[in-house]
Image (tube, rainbow, N blue to C red):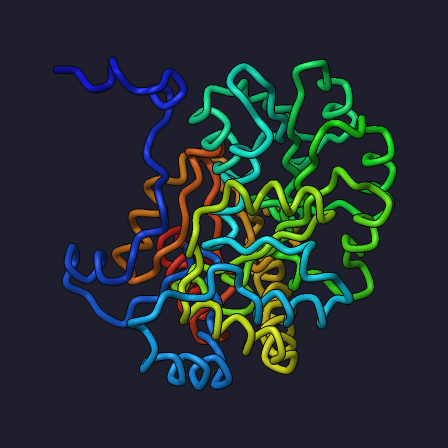
Length: 366
């Protein structure tokens, strides 16, 4: 029996998602220790004491189902950003939400628009439901919004925009997004994926919740995996107009967010000092990465995220493998159509020092 023959047509075109290599896997493979992982855009500070305390308080209650509606976390989000709880949808990480948006609004044969070099989950969720994935050629490694507008037709149901974009780090300004949203028909859902928004400077950050007031077809998606350090707990949220949120919550799986994640999320959302520390380290260390690349003549894509993508002008796979032997894990992104590039997450100063030393050794840099 060939079960590929009975799978949905869209699923037949997919390959399994390739996550960053775990530290434990490299330890088993090469028998080395003192490994630095700069592959998955994780928070190098871990998560704060406030979250640890919230998790501890939940441990005696794990025989109970979590609050299926996430009342307390919705209240925390609403109070922090001046929103109404009925605008909020919770997800098992923002990936869960991206899939939820597609299942709620896109049917077989409908079209989904996203950019070349954008987050690989966009085509994955589109093809899995037999939608037509419309990949628009990138402009300077990022979103070509005029190309998006030109691609809209009667079958277009959903548009994904990552800002900052992963894996290239490109950024769209508030004005660019406002101008674009004003031209998109009201019956098309636009998802603004802001998983990395906390790493943009406050003065340039998009006021996306204000845009929600102007454009009822907009959904803003955010993650607590990056700046807030909760990647292992899988928690994220979306904000939209209440009618869209109601539809999303009809499709959302019950208990999709566990009790520990819900409690930790409330704690970290109140911990502004921790996020400020994370963002400050990212800004300072990003400057060091840019200086390192400039010093050694390495091309890179300027990034507003917590990562930087370097173009080696040659297949990057051998460089990736050599770095593994030096105890440094980074992210190959050939699956994004970037076989000459590696994406490096911004770590703590000592972790970044190890990367600089390892890459200098691998490339014989002076």
